[in-house]
Length: 105
Image: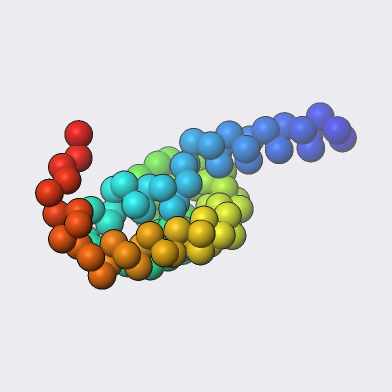
């Protein structure tokens, strides 16, 4: 019984690490293209969960089963991270001229 529980925990943690934090992914991939907003990681986490439930992820079906718990576990962590990053997000939204000259490497 302990072996099954340990294997389940390892699989969920592996899926969580493989999926990446939605807050970081939203700030590095989505926001530079679509414009800055508040709570982008939480929004991305909800989109990820929706895509996993509907089967719209670009992965095989068995990966959806592994990624859905990872996305659900990541959602509250992303909400806390987004709350901590809220002052930065608000500044970035209201002062885009301070970031206009920066180019991604």
